[in-house]
Image 1 (tube, rainbow, N blue to C red):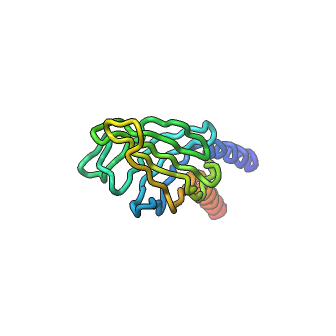
Image 2: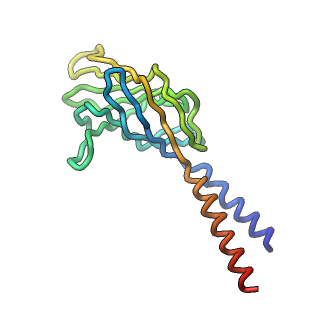
Image 3: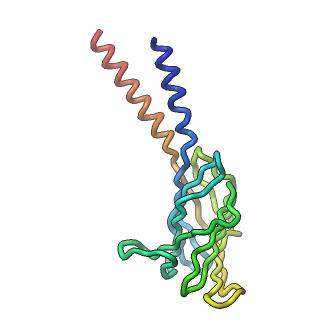
Length: 172
């Protein structure tokens, strides 16, 4: 019976590795000294991004804002996004539109980790009424990091199993 329960527990935990991972930007700095903050969700099994909430420290809000939130940029149009690149564009508004290109030093995976941003990562502002870029700036430092939920699930599951084993040992 113990072996059967162990096998069931093992296979019940396997689908947890397919959960998309929340990645957070850390210490991301542009060449003009401004910073980039926020994060996104990435699912390596489907190679898809979602919940992209990234904003620059000096930008007015674009698309959506709430008085309780910092200046907020919604990257509502993913352009060419893969495991090694997040390229997105904001909604057009009075300030024009912004294009963000983040290039990662290695592919994002559901296992999480810390990955450096490449210096080819950039932000471009196209202005409100012109087709050519109003300005472009590059990222000089920064990382993205994630701690996948499954690691916590394994720890929690093993703690529960240990408590159950201890309880059973006390009863007998």
